[in-house]
Length: 412
Image 1 (spheres, rainbow, N blue to C red):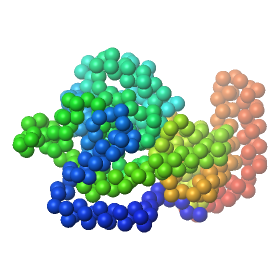
Image 2: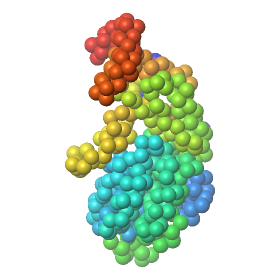
Image 3: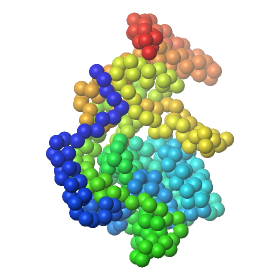
Image 4: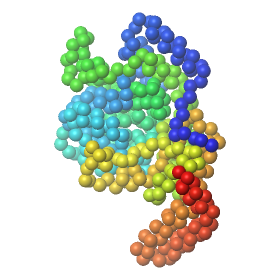
């Protein structure tokens, strides 16, 4: 069985409607961007997911959304606090507005920035905004407290919801940013959206999206650019809105299969009520991740990209000497098996079977041997003896399996 990291299918009805829409757009005589369907898409999105917010703007990408949000809340030239475990698009957007970023370590329970570390760093000088990232669709358990903290210090809170579209747990920020890249929960091929309740922020972002123009097409605000969405993208977005809730439901079902079938002694599958599961995220207790991935590859299963490795402070262009222990640990101790609605139950169960096979024998023995060594260092000799016995048992029981794995590895 061959299972790629991602597949995206559109049924005949979707394709037919898309073709009809493109023909209408091309023969309408209207502008091909920032026109009828861009406006419809933005407000249909609000109605579908974010009805507590008044304003939405369709933009060219999730990165455009981040830059517009930062400029919209007047963070230019200031320090922006972000999580160390986030997409590099955030620091890039901050640099584009002439700002600096300050990193915060993560809370391993939901992979968001640690609230208690944020409390210390938000007291710094010239803080322009805080960006809260929802990794894989998981939302911080402290999101309400973080929003209240930002209000106390009068600092705008931006939610990076590029993974979290469809989560009922979002919606505490002053501005929310979404991405519609092809692998996301819904797609417009490329594209993004900014959402806010704040009239001042909305009006500024509206102008900045199109060169900082006023009603006479005169640039009156610095920092503007061409960040518009095309009409064809927006029309596709309108069609996607009609199927996205069903697709989110399927992603949740897939995550549940992983949760119920992966060995709980070795794999920890992240789970949260309402999560749309842009990624299924699996924590592993060993540094032998590459061996697990390689074994999965030999069995036809391709893992998806990490979220994230390396973290920001280890990106070559940003390398910093500070240590971020949770972020560092998570970056090397997680996997993301495929999760997309096109997967069948049989395929997901096969992935689970392969991942469980990958940790037999050597990986389990190594796992228990490492804990035994730690117990020896701590002079917990009875625990060390017990774990050494488990390591020996796993090696004995799985000689044949290890030989099979070894043969497969040599064949790669």
